[in-house]
Amino acid sequence: MNDVLTAADIFMLLVAVTGGAAAISVVISRNVVHAALFLVVTLLSVAGTFLMLGAEFLAWTQVLVYVGAVIVLILFGLMLTRAPIGPMAQHNENGHLAFGVSTLLFLFLCLVIFRAFGDVRLDLQYTGAAALGEVIYVEWAFPFMALGFMLTVALIGAIILARREEGEGPVTDLADEIPARDSRDVTASPGAISAGARAPGARAAGGGSAPREVQQ
Amino acid sequence: MQATYPLVFAALLFCVGIYGVLSRRNAVLVLMSVEMMLAAVTINLVAFGEIARGADAVLTGQVFALFVIAVGAAEVGVGLAIILLLYRNRASVNIDEADLMKY
Image (cartoon, rainbow over the protein chains, first blue to last red):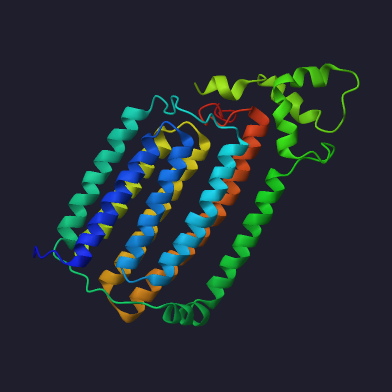
């Protein structure tokens, strides 16, 4: 193993330390929105790692897809499920077991990596988007189309899962869920509008203000 | 560049993701941990493509990593739909409480 630190080594170490610290912050942060923002840093450092490995197209795909779209989706999910935004207990009682399992696995993986690849050096080789595109559209054309089909199916499935059942009316999620606190009154009153009457009923069964109390 | 840096970084991301999946309560945070594990897998695919160092291996690793990114995006979409449904039916996204099919 040679101990020469090149500029690439130093940059990669910086990226890895930043990404690792942000990743640990994601899982121990007590504020869910902070966790999502730490995830941005982690995914950006993954993109930086791709750049260091010469995979330019993948790096920008990572930035576009994950930092651009997935984080927005996750924040949207956090807002829409009215996750308690603020510090509170976010971990269950498995914490020590989970810590033991992940630490042991990490040590084992490090041992394997250093024994097998401890003296391997990578000379950076730039792989442009042109070469990758040629391979995708020639050799991997059919799997690529299957991937597009899978994305379509996943999106349709997500819409079908998340949309309201028939008879619940054209009430948007937000307008429907804001008055959830007094939903008992809505369902109890005889003149209850049919639109949205079912969803608050189901929610009232779980307790009107359950999501805030449960997670504290 | 040492080949161990990206590999150890990927192992760290994967293990932190395992910790998050096992110990977090909020389902959205569990989904974020799964995303981290997927990111670790993509790093490994690209890195081992570089280590194998054939003309084919580099590009094949990157194509597989691209596929994993696309699958991860699809997974987030479906996962969030399921979480919204869970929230609508149970008024909570605490996955410890989603035990209707446990017994």
